[in-house]
Image (cartoon, rainbow, N blue to C red; front, side, top):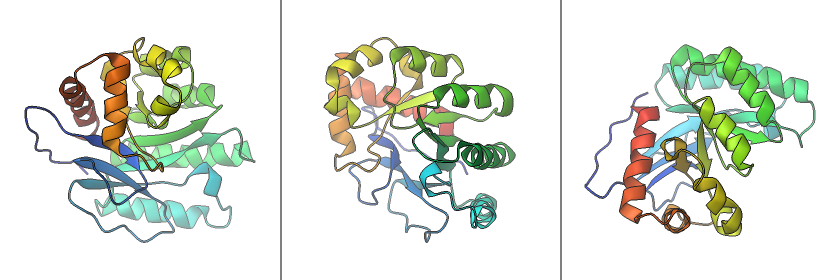
Amino acid sequence: MKVAFFTNFAGMYIDCHTHCIKSDADISVLNFYPEEPIPALVKGSILSCGIHPWYIDPNKIQHDLQRIEEFCQQNKIAAIGECGLDKNTKDMNLQKRVFEQQIALSEKYGLPLIIHAVKTHHLILEKKQTKAKQTWVIHGYHGSVQTAQHFIDKEIFISFGENLIKYPDKFKKILNQIDLNFVLLETDDSNLGIREIYTEAAKLLDLDLDMLKIKIEENFKRIFL
């Protein structure tokens, strides 16, 4: 599923991962889970669907994967995810298997993958190197600058959200040391609007807000056009 974009000279506010239907973004990627009804699309929204590692049900894996594949075949979704690996959640072997199956769907249908990664960055990098050609996005990034650079070296995009506001000193250092060509912004499940996230990111980068909007839009188009 490719997305048509219309822009103005100052760029758009783009939320690359959210669970909130109501948004102050011009474009938003709205996440839902296979067991949920397909959300009603509002203007400017596109959909992603995946099996989150927190919600893997061994009795429903094949059913959920079949649902995701049907959404791919019907062009209902623009990305797969969020999916991934979480060290704080039990049964890592099961998580790996379900993640690999969603990587396979991403590759089969040419869709980007939106990834939840907690203390598993080395495993994500390993999977990317051996199994994937499609674009990956690490959402809600909260790791180190070194790990961020490792992701970017593999051409994996990194999305930042409310942690920019919670931990400005840490993320000022990260944002100013990585390649902005691989940066996206998001709200996830926070109560913040994407415009607040953009304003904080621009401040941390000491960058004009309109210039940041244009850069994020360029990055987003590289994934979804």
